[in-house]
Image (cartoon, rainbow over all chains, first blue to last red):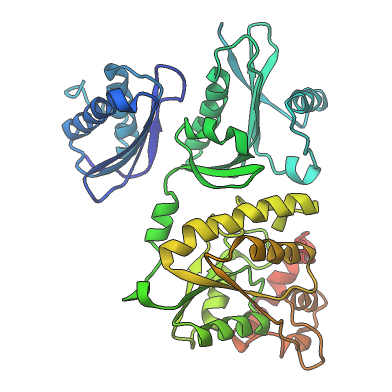
Length: 97
Length: 353
């Protein structure tokens, strides 16, 4: 899957995460803002990277603003952003879910 | 406690009054028509009783008039809710690169939401979020081999349109430096459109081999950094906006491109630009030297200004602009005089910048 345009999913409210995906050239580069980055930063990045990789995205710029999201939320928001960015929202990625 | 996001239509007088009172109670006081008229949409946050407890607006890609009341609420929750609603609305419109101008004390709150601070002064801060950001902008600026060791200068101009005065300024800088960046203001609020101004600067400096003409993007005298350049504003407003504009240049743009000197023309005529030059003088050195070049005069002894050129266009007096502008600009004006006059007739202000 290829990123065609910048896209966003999620909000900035408590327990959510906002994921912005745009075209990248240098693998999956994640810029994470989180109050719990020290404790969970690596785990959050891991979930995002694994989800994108499972969807077949190798290159992307990711800007993530975390407000204490659980892994399932991170995954859901990442999938939504990726499908919007790839313009495939009408073909749900069941195998990744 | 469930808060609700609603659209506030400021054209409705009662809504506008309620909105303004709410913000005034939070210490926001600038409601000049010039500012408020530029707002594209305004959101409100209502509590269970339907009371307004937060609001935020957007003008282009700039967030404005954000205020929340935190009484009886989880600290930050309402602020995050309103900023989240605003940014999501803008993302839906495919605006992914957003700015905010705010009081310095709120900078941290925005940084918690992923905004990056570009500059701050004692009173105000300027932040951006989204994509592309300032690093992407700088990465796209052309560079020359061995630039770190070269003497590099920068000029920022609106060039509405490019005159012999601009040309003279660029020539002086080109003579005294190995490389000169000319940043063209990228805001379409001038008689000559951004693309036209950019092409005329390029055409008018094409023979100067060490000059690179660059789009100033959102970072130099743009509508985001320095709205007072385009809107009639009080001295104090101009001063605090230009302070941030100068600091973005000094701390972010100049170091990335090894720019050691900024050139400006002396400013005897425009009040706004005059204050801007003073502020640059205060803010840039010693990191970036400021060189003020005495403004060029025409053969009749008057200063060459783009304002004069625009007046000639309006008065259909094209002979008078000869000597004021290079041949490239002259030709463009002659070829497009009808459409330029049409723009003036439609209300384009030609007396500002």
